[in-house]
Image 1 (cartoon, rainbow, N blue to C red):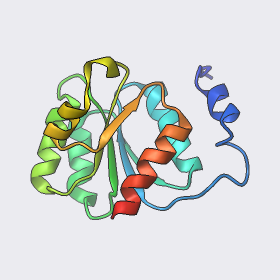
Image 2 (tube, rainbow, N blue to C red):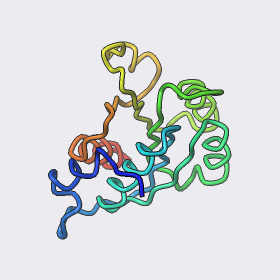
Image 3 (cartoon, rainbow, N blue to C red):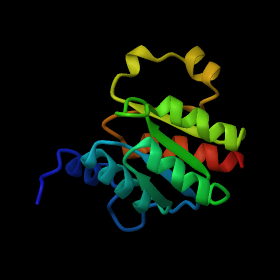
Image 4 (cartoon, rainbow, N blue to C red):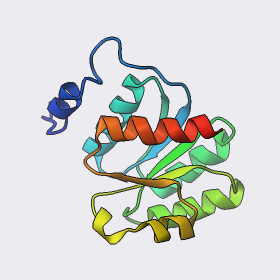
Length: 145
């Protein structure tokens, strides 16, 4: 079994413990890196969210096309092979102009608030994911619904 450098962080933040807050909603998590996809899914599920996952933009578009009425928030990796996260988001936005999306990146220094606003995104999640940051940002978006 592959050892995860993020597993200890999740347990230290208390998300894996019993009695963690439970939220409701469905998240589509799009990430091309297996370890980050698995850990992001685990964090979100432990928070009580239903999680759909995709490893690339094409699969995410297929899932979104089938289940867009069920998806509350999109979390998408900015840099993915074949179809980048922003291109994928823009295609989804053409299907649903009210889509709520967080961009995910390990290079947040290159992204500022004006760019996020210009693109119509709801915010940024930095990698590696921090459970508290995910909880706060995703819950704020779902409460807005």
